Length: 308
Image (tube, rainbow, N blue to C red):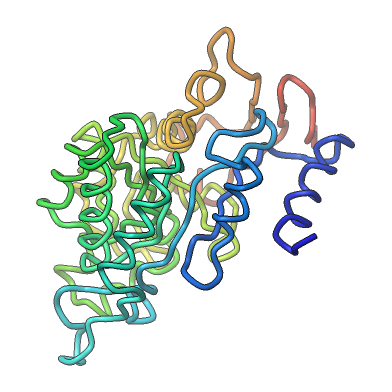
C-alpha cells in the first residue's frame, strides 16, 4: 500500500473505531511530480465521496509562497527589493492543464494562491475550466487569497470562486505585511469585509500548524482588523461579530458543499455545538481574545469536551 493510501486508511480506521474526534475533509495533493490525484481517482476517491465524519474534499496545488517571506507572487515588487516579485511555482500552461484535468474529473479545487500574481493565474485557470465544462456550483476555492484586487474580486464573484482566507494571518503576520509591502498594500490584505459585502461567502480557518488552531485571534482579527501588536489593517474590512461567526461556521460548511448538514443551529443539521463562557456577539473584542474559554463541545449531540 502506498503511503498515501496508508494515511487515508488510518483516518478510516480511526472513524470506524470511534477515535476520530472531529469531522475531516481530506484535501488531495495535486502538484506535478507528487500528485496523488491519479491514484485517488482510480480508487474512486472523488470530491464528495465519504460520509459526514470523513469525506474526500478538493485538490490542492501551490502557486506561490508567503507574503511575510517575500515569496508570494505579486505583480509589483516588494519594498526595498525592486527585482523581487516573489515566486511563481508553476507556468500558466501547467496550472491550466492540472486545473482542467481535475475539474473534468469532477474534483473541487482548493489551490494555494496568496499574491495577486498567483491569484490572477488561478482565476484564469478556473475561468477556462468552467468555460470549457460549465458547472455553476463547483465552488472552486482560492486558499488564502491574501492580496486580491477589486477586478479579481469581481471575476471571482462572477465565476462562483470562493475566497478561503485565514484571518488569523492578520493577527500573526499583519505587521510583517506592512514591512515587506508598504502601508498601502499591506493594510489591504485579506479583504474579507469586501468579500462579505459582495455576497461571496468567505470562510475562514487557522491554517494550523502555521497559526494556532485557537479560534479567538481569528475572531478578534475579523472584528477589529488588529494585528497582535495593535496595528489596524484597513478598518473598512472589519466584520460584525455576527458576520465573523457566520464566516467561521455557515460559510465554512458552504465552502465544502456541506451547508445542508452543518454550519447552522437549525432542525435537521448535525448538533455540532461549542459553548463558551462569553457571549461572542456582545463581548468586547479584547475579552474575546484573552478572556474566553470553550466549556463544552458536542459532536452530533455527543459530548466530546467538557471542562465544567
